[in-house]
Image (tube, rainbow, N blue to C red):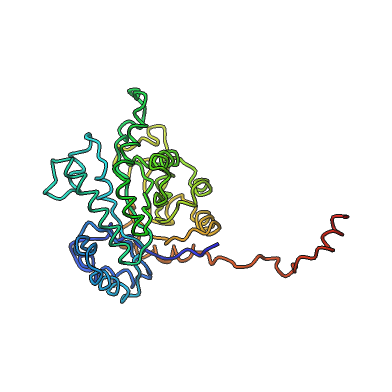
Length: 350
């Protein structure tokens, strides 16, 4: 068994135009002051980390790491959620996902995909230079618009979709393998990797590539009504990153799992700050510890009611209170001893 690391915090939802949220040093000082020990670093803003430089310069990465360490913090993982999303975009979503693309590749899906692949690769190199072994991302989606099979999907569509998704990701996965870094896909609605079966399909399509792993976030499973504890039993060997994000699901006679057209606060399924929702975090931390998952417990804030400032203040002690110091002995060790063959045979009547 292994004790989880933490508490960590994903900075993406806290970036803003005012201090301390508008500079790396400000965010680090703020996070450390709240009791966090790690930061998950988004890579979409060059003032946090410039991937172009980080992929080329060890000195830059050493300086960045030292700067963050100076606040008593570690980088838990780099995140390319937005760039990973752009590796695979169905044309139905071109206009909306162009918001995540640089101006030079907007309105050009082929160029956008090429840019995304190159950018995620740079994050793999930067991760190695920073001494990281896990990286957080999204898979993108070619098939999400066909999730509910009406109209009927033509035979072979799903297989072809995952084959194409794997074709786009394999060069990235091979690059990450060369750099000794795992890609942890956040299993997330809106992505083609959104549950266990879709993860297995992608894994098979990549030839069981050893760098295909996952970021476990139970909030997305609760909203799908998937058993998030049993999920750990099935896939614990692939869990290399962990978001501590709460959620609640309150179906009514008017809406259920598909109640996504309502505003967030009015939906049957909605995200909450850790401890305010329905997620059994004691069960999750127990299972991740039991299986020896070597992960950071990183808070992600997306609550539809509580302010991000309060969520961040409460997140560090919440995670700390759930981290289990993994035992190195069993409770009845005192009654044991060295194996005694004669005694064993006597007990068995041999």
